[in-house]
Amino acid sequence: MRITDLQHLIHKYFIWIVISSYLVAGLWPGLAMSIRSAHLGIVEVGQAKVTITAPPLLLALLLFNAGLGARVHELAKLARHPRLLAAGVAGNVAAPLAFILALSFLMSFWHNPEEVQQILTGLALVAAMPIAGASSAWSQNANGNLALSVGLILLTTLLSPILTPASLHAVGFVTAGDYSEDLHELASDGAGVFLGAWVILPSTLGILAHALLGEKRAALASPYIKLVNSVILVILNYSNAALSLPGVVAHPDLDFLAAILIIVGALCSAMFAAGYLVARVFRADRGSAASLMFGLGMNNNGAGLVLASLTLSDHPNVMLPIIIYNLLQHLAASAVDKALSRGMGPFVRQDAEHPAK
Image 1 (cartoon, rainbow, N blue to C red):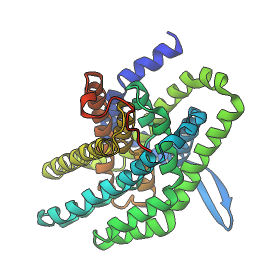
Image 2 (cartoon, rainbow, N blue to C red):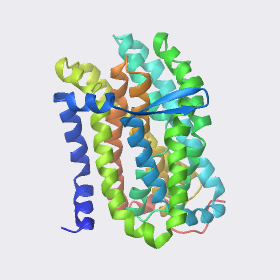
Image 3 (spheres, rainbow, N blue to C red):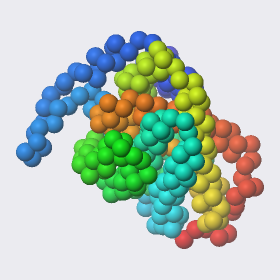
C-alpha cells in the first residue's frame, strides 16, 4: 500500500479512530498515564527550569508539522480582504464568550453548582484556544478560500498570548471559587508562556523549515507529515482523555454527561453559524464563507486539553467539555462539508461582485 493510500484510508475513518482512542482511555488508562508521567528532559528558561513531558512535546511536534505544511505565499492574497480576516478573528473571540456568559445565567438553575463550574471552565479553555490547523484541511476539501483559512489560523495563533488570557479572565469573572481562581491564575501566569513555548514557537519553526525546504520538497513530505500528525493526535487524545474518562466509565453521571453533550453541541453549532453570519454580513463569496465556518467552528482543542491536563489535573471533569467539543467539531465539519457540496451556496453570495474589503 502506498503512503498516500494509507493516509487517505486513515483520514476517511479518522473520527472513528479518535472515538476508539477515547474508549481505550476510559477502559485501559495505564499506558496513557505512563506516557504522561515520562520525563524527557529539563530545559532552563531564564531562571526557571521547565520539565519536558510527552503531551506538550507531542503538541509542539504537531504544530511544527502544521507550520511545515503551510503555504505562506498564499498569505499575500489576504491584503485584498483585511476586513474579512479581522471580522473572523473578532467572531472567534466574541461568539464563544457571549455563549458562555448566557450559559452562566441559564445554568444558575442547575441542581449541582460544582458541575456548572466544571462545564464553564471547560468551555473557557475551548473558547480561549486559537483556530485549529485542521480547519484549513476541511476548507481545502470544500474548495474554500485557503489564504483566508491559513490567515485565520496564523493570526489567532500569533495573537493567542493576548487573546487567550483575555478570554480566560473574562470567564473567570462568571465562574466561582477554585475554578475562578484557576482561570485567573492561568490567564496571568501560565497560558501565555505555554502558548509561546508549545504553540507559537514550533509553528514558526515549521514555517521557517517550509521556506528552507521549498515548495517541491515540502509537497513530497506532505503525505508522511499527515500520517505522523494522525498518530500524534491519537496519542494526545488517548493520554489526555485518560485523566477524566476512567472516572466517567467507573461512575457515570448520566444527567451531567447529557448536559455537557447538549451544551457543547449548541456551542459548536453556534460557532459554525457565527462563521456563516460573518460571511453574510460581509457579503463574502462561497469559498470565503466555507473558510469562515470551518475556522470559527474548529478550535485547537489539542492545545486546550494539554493545557488543562497540566494545570487543572485536580479537576479532571473540566476536560470532558473539551473532549466532546473535539469530537463534535469534526462531525459538524463533515456535515457542513456535505451541505456545501450539495449546493449550500445560494445562502451566501456566489460571486465576487461585492467582495469584502
